Length: 170
Image 1 (spheres, rainbow, N blue to C red):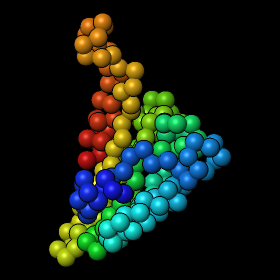
Image 2 (cartoon, rainbow, N blue to C red):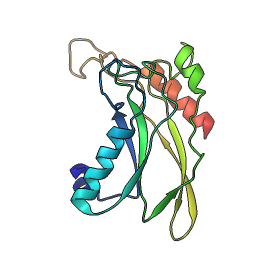
Image 3 (cartoon, helix red, strand yellow):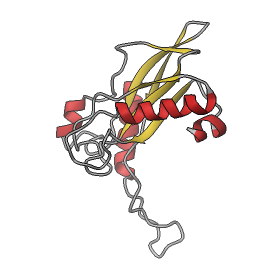
Image 4 (cartoon, rainbow, N blue to C red):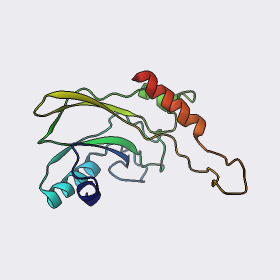
């Protein structure tokens, strides 16, 4: 909450990544992050007096989105209720969530599903669609100045395919 308040200045909309489900790494079948997100919203309000609301990613499939097993990490949105309205029913993804969870040829298989949502900014009533991404990890890449030259760039192929999928959606 302090980073969002003091380092990012209480923005109108935030895209959050690495948000775990309500019981973290416990592999219980829980996929909702409602409690996790409410704790963030409550902490922002307690420190700043500014009220945010959250939009959870309801397209999560248990243990199919990468990250810590059981944690069901995802992309989510926070928005300032005094400056922005969220358009209910606008949440979608750039790829089919069932295909992402089951098809190894899907560019987001085993990775985080992009989240798309539309917000109305007040008072102009301007609609803005936001795409939140958290692409495949680059973990396992070689250091730039290491012994392997050129350095291996883990995840690069998947990240290019994921970028192509987002571009096609746009």
